[in-house]
Amino acid sequence: MTLAKICGLKTPEALDAALGAGAAFVGAVTFPRSPRHIEPLHAATLYERARGRAKVVSLLVDPDDALVTEIALILKPDLIQLHGHETPERVAEVRRLSGAGIIKALPVSTPADLDAAAAYAPAVGHLMFDARPPEGSALPGGVGARFDWTMLQGRTFDRPWFLAGGLTPDNVGEAIRLTGAPLVDVSSGVESEPGVKDPALIAAFMAAVDAASPRQGRTK
Ligand SMILES: O=C(O)c1ccccc1NCC(=O)[C@H](O)[C@H](O)COP(=O)(O)O
Image 1 (cartoon, rainbow, N blue to C red):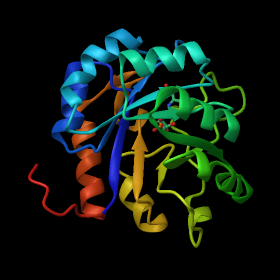
Image 2 (cartoon, rainbow, N blue to C red; image 1 turned 30 degrees about the vertical axis):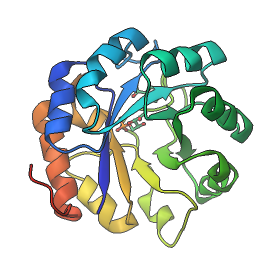
Image 3 (tube, protein in one colour; image 1 turned 90 degrees about the horizontal axis):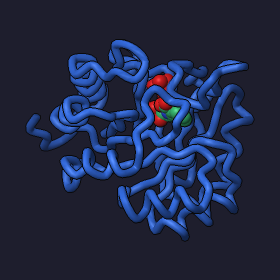
Image 4 (cartoon, rainbow, N blue to C red; image 1 turned 90 degrees about the vertical axis):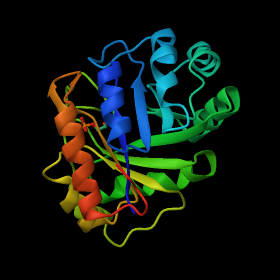
């Protein structure tokens, strides 16, 4: 059974589409350079509708202590996704400061990149393998780039892991079948333009995840 996270949700319509389609995780990006950026106070109000329906994830990039504390107090996420250059020590510090679970995203372009996971496992609840963005990319994630998924075949990790990067309704089934990913994450693959989520693409993505990995007992 593969569960899905829809990332970069910043409107009630987009969040409702993800929740209605059965996303297990919903993500708020707080990173001003991103077209998906949402301020902590706005996210706190918006994500109230997700409580008890999906895990609320706050995505941060190399956050300082003040931002971690603000997010923890105002948004109260179930999980913080760290998508920058955070060391294992910094990840442990963010966990302590926030009291939230941690997803550490690791950029992947070669099999050796997967080896970094071992050092993070003690400090995190989840790992995320995301495509390393192309050189010169304005963002460290959410750019629709993918990596060679066959690198994950035969690999095991000490924590549940998300596959991310370039997933779409058309390719997520193949990605799950090739890798056995227990969790998948998508952003630009369910958008009509950068930062604008498309409810029909969200529904199609979730249907494709279900088709590749039926979820037991799901009613919608
Ligand atoms: O989505 C963003 O704008 C973003 C900004 C800064 C760091 C990470 C970001 N997104 C990371 C995600 O969680 C994406 O879902 C993941 O990288 C996959 O993105 P995509 O290839 O667009 O599906």
